[in-house]
Image 1: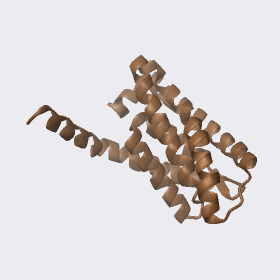
Image 2 (image 1 turned 180 degrees about the horizontal axis):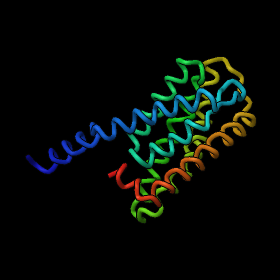
Image 3 (image 1 turned 90 degrees about the vertical axis):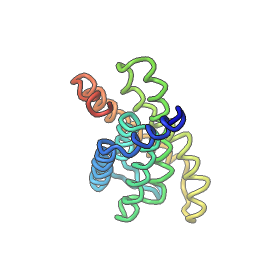
Image 4 (image 1 turned 180 degrees about the vertical axis):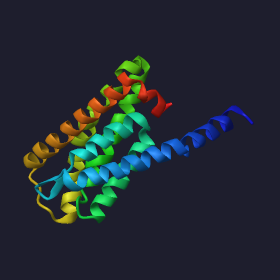
Length: 183
């Protein structure tokens, strides 16, 4: 077996790890449960700080692929249960991926800074997700969206979710539990 095949098989083993699948399932369930009672409507969309909190946790604990899958699952289930709208997708996925990418960069600085990646969730949500929602998804759905109203609501939602995920991750780090979860 050559080096490339070993790397490929290791990647596959990491992706289908029982531990990661279990953690992803728990995060999806938690995201849907939180979204059912912690949500507020904003100009045609429904903001959910719980989604952003889960994005921060998934991005740091599981990585970009898993974080995106979790955001897609939570968004889809929210849409099916009518506790979310089509805007759950552009509002959730970019934030989760950005957290993961920043986590990969910050990991080089040491474990102490791991939780700070969760605070980058608003970058993905507001700089990537919001323009997608307002200029692509809203016209496709014939929903008039006021950019300023949506920006304020989404900012409130994603900043509060990012702060909560930061606090959870920092608590896990200080208690030493994060190493058990991630590694």
